Length: 502
Image (cartoon, rainbow, N blue to C red):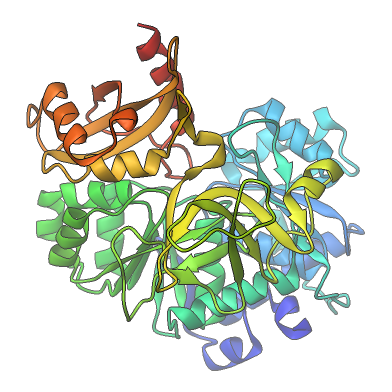
């Protein structure tokens, strides 16, 4: 354990056996496993030279870049705690996170260095440093890594959930390595795997793809962000084997027919998706174009982060998020959090595994409410079938109560997706003067004019319960995405309120 902690998801075997093989690639910049090992040590050395050691928090403000990975691992090697920041958040939010985590300083990318320096000074950080990649790589490497406690905190990302201020989520070395190791084993990653990282690296999805791939001795291609044409070109150029994203991203790739005709994407062997339903047509189209399957999964920052995975080889069920990871305990509990519900019934998902957060930073009341005896209340509502496969039905916070009847957005979405004219859909709640709250559906049609509101309403009445039908349907050309690539439900909820009011 200590050996892997020090190397930051690069095992000694990977560095020794694959020293000259690529670990990270970005445009023409290639970093081998041996070079990444050295470059992370230099970041650690730079921090150690400034007295940054075990337990000290250091923020990361970086757009997607290979050097973000060096900085992340370097912070861990110094024994410090990495605090990844979302560069798209406003300065007020970032300043709150920096102060809440008691960060000593900020490591920043070239485009964010001026902003980092301004933030460091305005917050009055302990050392107020903001170092860029050039300065970091001129440092002497760590002469000796500090002793690592496997149960010490190595990262503290921040998650705001659906409401409230961002909450710090302390994660330990032991827990994060457990998750990376079990994911690479479940997906049978080895040194031939080449993953594409286009989602934000500060987010759990891309971060765990990075860690599990490197831990297996494989390599990662880093893109500055998700842009369909650039992704297809990268797949062709770098012979990418693994993709991770959300269904909307895959639909955008499939829509680039001209670029697809010019690119060889046959290297892709496997893809995973989360945060939204994967439809039959998407699965079929992706398999036809890429020759690879899409498997769904589920995780959350404070919960492992990965909890459920659909098998890479084996039985996959449409709409299911898969099975619990080995070593991950899950339960579906009733509203009081004490009793498990029966097979087929909806309950809140509770999770216990080595990767679950130790507690929300500085929030003892929230910790007491959400974590009991090592079990985390996820606030996500699911059901399981008799084979042990889990199905997401919605967030507890998103539950729509229509005149006393519980309506789960996910189930309304799945019913609407059964109509051949519906390509994509997101359902949220809108306040209603009589019913309290009602479902509002934002629908992307397979082609303009493929269905009318009346047709879809009549269709729903034929396949779903009357009380759950969408009182308002709005056709959109695409669903809005947040910075992480997920559907921006906050924006849709604001639009739903306005539509119901109108």
